[in-house]
Structure formats: structure tokens, C-alpha cells
Image (tube, rainbow, N blue to C red; front, top):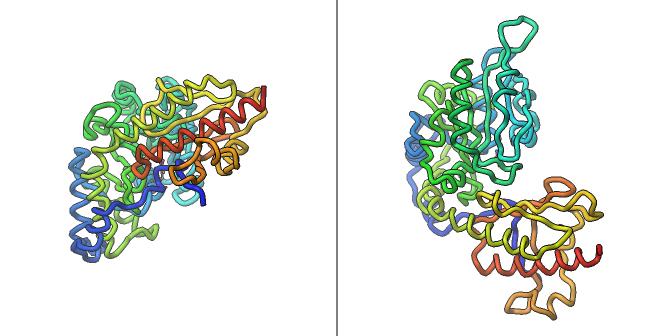
Length: 373
Ligand SMILES: *Cc1c(COP(=O)(O)O)cnc(C)c1O
């Protein structure tokens, strides 16, 4: 039996003891009737933290983003503008179009998760009857595919000015908003100040088992509640889940900086190996996501590297690449594309697990690099 260090995603985090305790002991009711006190408490807490009027507890970040788009773009023939590397565009099955009848228009993302505001302005439609109706701009913070980047606050402020000029609301996919706030050392309310709506995940780095919140004005959330019901996201005694999310806000948010520190440590060690086949950029790494790049000229691919990390060879367990109980170590990551591997640090990875991951990654990276010389 090998010891597994699972760095595929921060979604693999399991609820903590305190969360399980809260899940068993919280007061419950039927949330579709608005009668679950724990859901109500969570909704008002997260709305408060983000400086908005109201919030809605939803089953997933995907549903949260979809509801936001459907509410902002509720006029037939609407268009939402998104970054081409956004989760909304890449990983939500085109739900906005599929289910919401909303066209998504993409702008190229810069490496820092932003997009050009000049390009945005050039895309905003006027009153030409040939064109769809531009109704929404979506941003992502932290930006996952850009490597967990906290999007610069100054850019969001400038974006807000542009959007105001064109009367366009901003929706922030803040699946990892608290990671962004930790990096920026800013309050969530400040970071989302100019956004009409925000989606936040409790089930990523915050370690709760299920759920996201959609946050905005009373009027927005009133409409969002209707759309959630239509999409089948109206849950009954959802307080069992909200209870864990409430604990996450108190217990896990203050600990996110540890994930960021561990991600830095992993990146710096990979960088310090000075290998031709693998590179990282610790300086541009803001939060809990480590991107390892394989140069285009290398015959290696992400899948080959990830497969090797999931195997244990005899030499590893005879050397020092093993647990104190002589078990081999398996490290799991995910492939963003054939030349990019993502490792994600999270609450279930302590210093010991990180150390074992570092030993294993070092061993395998050196081995694969040597084989290519
Ligand atoms: C995970 C994620 C989502 C979607 O969340 P689910 O709960 O998995 O549906 C949305 N946006 C970003 C940036 C994410 O990382």
C-alpha cells in the first residue's frame, strides 16, 4: 500500500471534525420555504462578509455562475462577455448557452487573469439590430487556469469604470475569492465592491463537503432564488450542508495562508532542481495552485509525468523516497494541457504530506529529466 498525496484539486478536502459536529447538531428546516435557520444564518453571514445585501446557498459553483448569468441576461438575445480561459467558458459545458439561451463572447486572457479593457470596449455592442444585447461581464478571482492568480484590484477598479460607462453589471466567479483576499491582504467586501454578483465556493479550499453561495442585491437574489428552483437546486434541510460551510468561514479561511506558503515551498524546491524538463515560476504564483510547465521541445507530456508519479518503483522504497513506515509515495496532480501540470495545495495537506510529495516529485522529475538528456 502506497501513501497517497492528492494534489489534484482543493475539492478533495474532507469536512473537518468541527464541520461534522456542526452538521449533526445544527437546527434544520425546509429551505425552499425559507425555514432552515442554518441556511439563513450562512446566507446572511456570507452576504455581510462580502458587503452585499443578500445571498443564496446553491449546490455548486457551476449552478451559481449559471444562475447569475441567467438573472443578469434575462432578456432573450443577450450576450455575456467572459475570458477565454475562464471556468465559465471552459468547464461548465456551455451551460449559459445550453440552458440559459445566453451567448458567450470571449476575450483573450492575459497571464495575470485579466483581459484588455480596450478589447472589452471594442466588443460591447450598441443598438444595431443585427447584434445581440451585451448584458454582462464575468471575471474570475482567483483565476484558476492562469495559475490561481489574484486579479489585480486596480484592474477590477478600471474595469468597473468601463462597465459603468456602458451600464454593464460585473459578475465575479470567486470560487476561490478568499484565496485572492489572503494574497491581496484586502477584505472580501473591498475586492467585490464593484461586482453586482459574486459566486463563492465552500467546497474548494474551504473544505466544506458541498455548496457555493451566490451573493448580490436583494432584488438580484430574489430572482436568483426563482432560477435556482427552476434548475432543481432548491434543497430542503440543506442546513446539514450550510452548517459545514459556516464552520469553514471561521475555521478554514484564516488558515488559507498555510496552503499558499506550502505551494510556494513546493514551487521553490522544483525551481531549485534546475531541470531542463520542468519549470515553475514561484514569483508569479500567488495562492495555492502550482503550475509546472514542460517546455514545448520536450518529448514529455503531462500525462506521462502524472502516470509516473502514480507508480512506485523498488528503488524508491529502498532509498529515501518513502514514508517512515517504508511505504512508497504516490502523488496525484491534474493535467491542464499536454505541457502543463497543476498541483493544488489544500487543508488536508499538512507539512508531513507536503514533505513526502516533495521527495516523490523530486525523485520522479530528476529521473525523467535524466532520461531525456
Ligand atoms: C470549481 C470552480 C467552479 C465550479 O464549481 P463546482 O462546485 O465544481 O461546480 C467555478 N469556477 C471556478 C474558477 C472553479 O474553480
